[in-house]
Image (cartoon, rainbow, N blue to C red; front, side, top):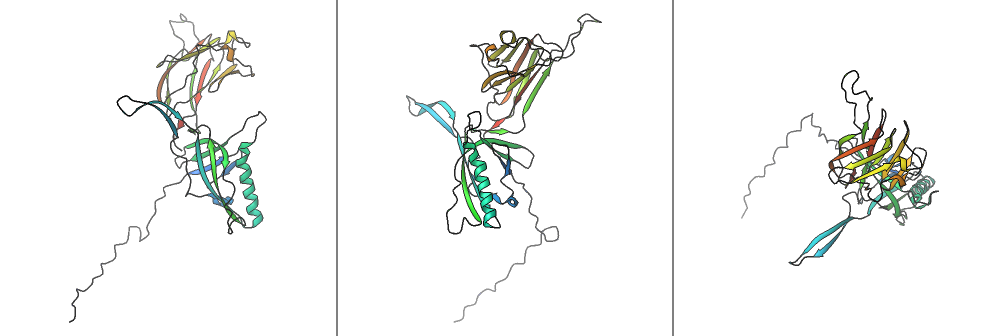
Length: 327
């Protein structure tokens, strides 16, 4: 017998979106990535018109730093975390290189290979010089990390590659696993014009150098600042008030002698260095063994600068690049 079926009705099409039926796709922006080789030459990695591009599928190692955890067994079961140590990170970066002709492709392939492997060549100072991978965001901020080429520039070795196109999956090894802001944070304190206390009436001179201040580290981890002191000064003391850690540079105990007007001393906390503007090594003038070249943790840290022998023009400049877990 015949089967009576309910008529099928087709629903009307949805109304067109606003704007005359044109669907607008929002522009979310994208990162711009640049590699700087040890010579300082910039190699944009996200500009396909140059003859190479980054393959989005396969980029790894831009997240939080890897850590090694050391623990001790707990008597009641489980364990207690005793120590945390950040480990070097490895960044995986896939690149596709191409050209209109075989010669053009090979030229680009060789240039890129040299730019990355140059990090494995000893410099004139007997050290290996890293390259720098920089990731810039649409808001104008950028973070960077030092890298050494490890492996990956071998090509795919397939029948369809090696003529005018090939891909390399680079492994870039990072001594320091943290990303660094390209923009430094600076704190400047300077002594104002000195005045006579009683002339023309009781007055107090500016003492910004000889006082306390708060340093803000907007990053995720500790930073090790660089200090630049401008004379006149005979003794410089820096104290981190929350821990009591401090160090003093006694200029009278160095081959340089007192720091005169306009002369500078630069103190690096990691690695420890103290150099005059003429290159004299002043590290022996630090207050060893009590000296602690302290770091600045994330957040706000109270510090005190003290310059003995300070006069008009004496100044202290603290500079550091915030460090972050991720790119």
